[in-house]
Length: 85
Image (tube, rainbow, N blue to C red; front, top):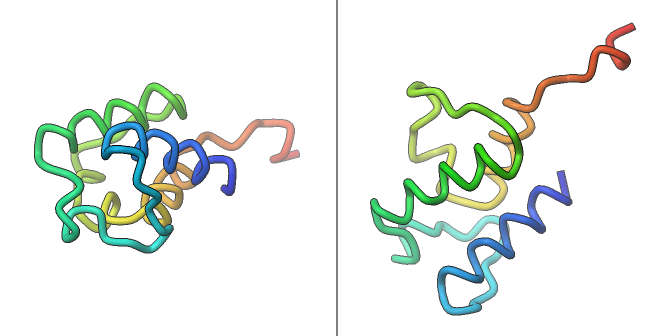
């Protein structure tokens, strides 16, 4: 999960002027994210982590902090079959 957070921090920093964001900082409430950038964020998550974000996942609670997004990635990432045996 820490690797996911690191990638999210880097992506966000590149798009909001290099500012460091805390893992629990509310990026929407702080004004760092608008609706257009929210779509870029969803696309980044899908492409970078090879997950599919479904309509039911498009809730603010899943995207408002780095921790929330890392949790979403963790829930959406398929578990390798070798770990299930």
